[in-house]
Image (cartoon, rainbow, N blue to C red; front, side):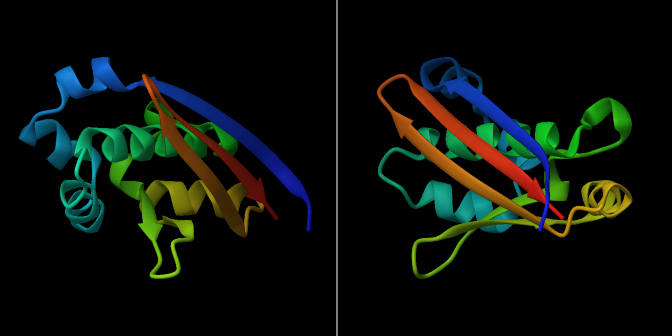
Length: 123
């Protein structure tokens, strides 16, 4: 296995919370992500962490919206075990294939005012 890319992103939870509205949630997140985040006591923290994760994945892939990637091309999935993994579709999956990425690992956290995520693209 070879490390192909690393991405990191940090989000101000309070700023993200002010912008968070149903239309933005629908634009950024898939139904499973929304269902999980909405079930939390402080959903805005989970949404902010997932947004940071999507940004980190874009960076690890070396591409973003201007290269055709879309927010919903990156899904952050929480397993029953508590482990979180990334599911790529659409343009993100195509980009991953083009640069030889076979797996993307993610780590997310939130505390106080910030949510942070780190993604590694491995091939």
